[in-house]
Amino acid sequence: MDLIYFRGCMGRERVPEIVRATRQILDHAGVSYSILEDEECCGSVLLRTGFREDAKEKINENLNLFSDSRLLVSCAGCYRTFKIDYPRLFNVKVDVIHSSHLFYQLLEAGEIQIKGDLKVTYHDPCHLGRHCGEYDAPRKVLEAIGTLVEMEDHHMNAQCCGAGGGVKSAYPHIAEKVAQERIKQALNTGADILCTTCPFCKYNLKSHRIKVMDISEIIANLMGVPRSTKIN
Image (cartoon, rainbow, N blue to C red; front, side, top):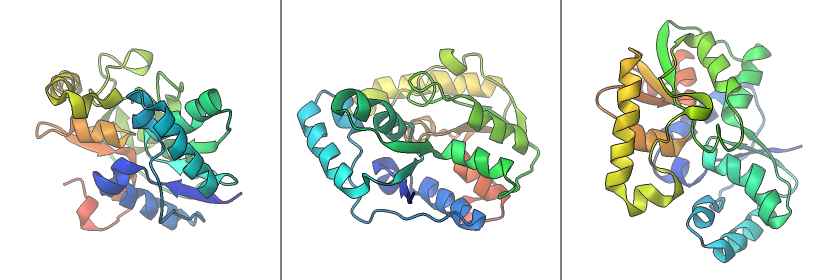
């Protein structure tokens, strides 16, 4: 089955460094994939904010582009939408894998080698964790990189980053306040890096007090990619 890397709106428009790092990892590991030059939104934000008919139109457009392919996504929101919402609301099954799962598979198969001495804490995105029950793969990757230290609230009890459900756009002051509380938890771990696996989370949690990185950026950095993605 063809693998399509679905970059997502945030990856294309707001945090392209995640897309760049992910593609570098895929290329390094020799993974065959394609991207959609005319990629549409997955429909997640429309669904979360109540525009169901508009979302349905967007979903129909998407199905014409990738109905017979497997999707790779970096965004937890895209993952939840393809995995849960498409089947539940529109009776359409999509074969989708999150990037953290693929990275773990590549690590286990020896297709990528990563080793470091980083002290990292991990933020569970709501859509990937509580909504889809995906907790282990990113942690296993981070444990291979260095030392993983958990925040006070993690796994099922992890605090939201503050950006989900349209809050970042409609109520930016609330999103910022929620993010600051999560940053405090990260700082309390003494970690060098706050890692997440969702571009929305990275975008809202970015802070001068602690380095915030997507898991793809950390891996790409340790694999020796261009200086633009270096940690220091």
